[in-house]
Length: 78
Image (cartoon, rainbow, N blue to C red; front, top):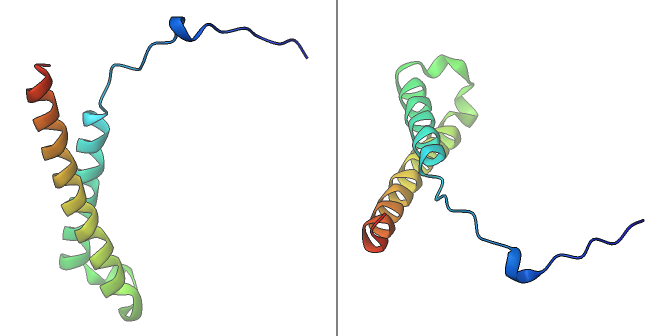
């Protein structure tokens, strides 16, 4: 196997913060929450409350993440 020499000076960080992916994930969790609230027949009664909690927490964490990224962007002037 051939060894590759990489100079650490040539490496640059990725200049993205993933806010678009966070928007998509948060919206999908919010949609799943509304589906579980208004159409509870998709899953059985035993696991419905667990999935509802998971989707609510996913939405909340997504909103917190969006706030953090937006504050970071503002602070860095991006």
